Amino acid sequence: MSQSSVFLLMVGGQIESAEFPDFDDIYCKYCFTFGPDWLVTSGLDEGLTQVTKKSRDDRQQFVWNFPLDITFKTTNPFGWPQLIVHAYGIDAFGTDVVRGYGVTHVPITPGRHKIRIPMFVPESSSQLQKLTAWILGRRPEYVDVRVLAQGEGREVTRVRSQGFLTVSFNVVMKDMKKLGYDVIPSEMSTSVIPESVGPNSGGTTET
Image 1 (spheres, rainbow, N blue to C red):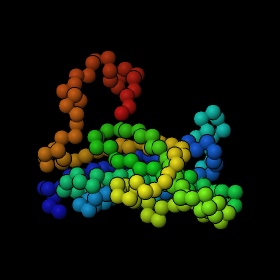
Image 2 (image 1 turned 135 degrees about the vertical axis):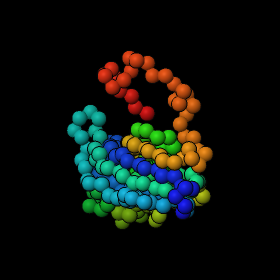
Image 3 (image 1 turned 30 degrees about the vertical axis):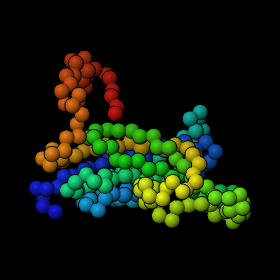
């Protein structure tokens, strides 16, 4: 790629927490999926969090605060990166079973973003398969989780909602405007910040 024809997307953040009220002892795997014109220039495009227990307060949250840090370069925005997260736990037989899958696009505007991702699990296509899966301790799973970022074939998969997962992103972009892409909303680029709002005003904002 010619350096004059590429832009950079720098993504930081955290896999912060999740809500799975019926379970305990959960960890997450994650991966980024992206188009053929995208290259990872630094950081990790997949990883594994630590195991965490559910909090004992009213929120009953699983907290990881696991860091994300990756930089991409590309010549065009087609195939914009998506984050796929799949959570696992231990069932009554001591087997690792999936507790939820979730997917979200990396935000397309720079700044800090917090996203609450709905999680889901695939279901057996029949009661007999469901019973067999429970007896053998082998629940339905995706062979390749990257299929979640695609549209093809997903309509034939039976799924059930199960929990939520919260991810924060810190997005920085470089040289997009040179290639003709304006990702800052017009109302932000022309807005005037009141004097009462600033680093000494005591207020906080969050996208």
